Image (cartoon, rainbow, N blue to C red):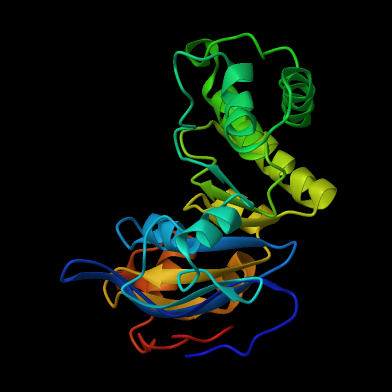
Length: 271
């Protein structure tokens, strides 16, 4: 399925197939991510959510298909242009991926030191600003090992914001966090979207987060290795009858779904 281009698309995948050698992870994916939205990549364990996100952020080359960034074909561009585009992306990896031998402030400063020509005073000022955005103004000199799980996620988010990205990619941002800390991180993500105008792509299987902050999304299936539903998590929860989607959204077993529910329903469609 090929989507018609829209002027408010920040990202678009067209007929995307991802594979490691002969092993196909996901095939024939088409979806768009609107500017300023929080877009969820959903699905059960092992369906390829993180691989799909890596492809649209430029880390994994697809076996087939196109990734468009502001209507520019990312993978058809020369290598230097792809690097230039990628610098408009910020990434929060699942474990925060902070350098353990660097302080929090040094971690946040690293992208600025590598990819800008700013002087030390300007970098220091920007680091203070980014840490304040995520509520870590007093933690700059602490080491990652001294931080709680939630603080490490926020420190990783501050580093992802260092270069003022157009798009933020968040890989399981709430994984391993208690419900209160997870809710605070969800609120922060929405504040950053609203305050900075960033587009956010989020891989997650945490239902409270998906329902509370995501505007749109795609649901990947490990069995058919393609998208079986498109729409906001709430819309899929309330209206999608596909048994796999229903089992995920309502925490049911697939065997508990109505016997006459067609398994192909909502495939490649928006509910």
